[in-house]
Length: 382
Ligand code: ATP
Image 1 (cartoon, rainbow, N blue to C red):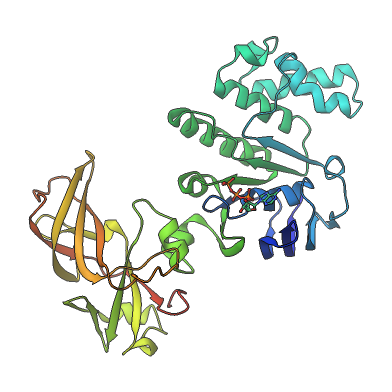
Image 2 (cartoon, helix red, strand yellow):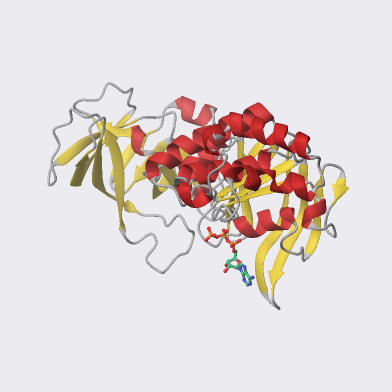
């Protein structure tokens, strides 16, 4: 087992494409770390640099206390699990799992014992003599896991290992992989673009955007204390609602609405007062907006807004609303219309709400969980 450290790691592809910028963080011994971010943000590149499959343009990667920049992938004592599983089609499950041990020159009796143990853990024992073509997707995935765990490496590196599975199997396998990692205690880096996978599996999650680190934190902190507008919008589904607003003393001006902010909002965010008189970005999660006529949630402000669409999901109802405040683009790319479009918002309403499209709903907004961001730096205000 080992901790993994990245110190000012950069990756430049070709002459000029800067894919990773000064990536610096630690993965603790035994930790399950997830890399998440939109397509092309550099998750796989970062993982492949740890694995040694991609050269490092500058900076240092260490596994344990050893700098591994110049070390061959096979000498890094890591095991990789890929999206494609990369199984040998002509070998049986037993031979596939045994492969890394054979390569290491282990004796047959010892290999058999280790393969049997891995198969038992992964519930593959009945399938040991089959070929991959005769297995389901989930079973193939388990064989790929078996090949990784049989060696007890310093770290597991997994690149979107569940993306070929259907939705139901993904849910089952993500729980299995997380449980297995916890029982083995092997440091694990797991790449996904799926924020639900990141939130449910990771001890901590690294959020990347365009090759730059946004936040490394526990799932709970990413959700409750996002570092900036991008993380706030990326984590959570439906996304956090983001608006441009103005802070006037203790009143929040959101379009034509005035929301008096109660004292605890300022007490828990000491630097908020220094933003008075300036535009801020305010974030409200969908679950903090409800239909005021039916909610039992403790609301501190009521505003009203037209309902454009209602989606009944059974346990909850998503109401799409039009708020007359300027919308904020979470990507931070101002296409010239930012701040000029009216904002659409989503409220997670109680299922017994009676609102219909075309209604003007009275909205209850809860206080504690309002998020504030600096309009210019887009960093959280605390
Ligand atoms: P995805 O979720 O789509 O797999 P990712 O976050 O894993 O994306 P990477 O595969 O790490 O992203 O790619 C990061 C950036 O580097 C992308 O813009 C990609 O086009 C670019 N890139 C990746 N590999 C190469 C390469 N061999 N040569 C040039 N550019 C590359």
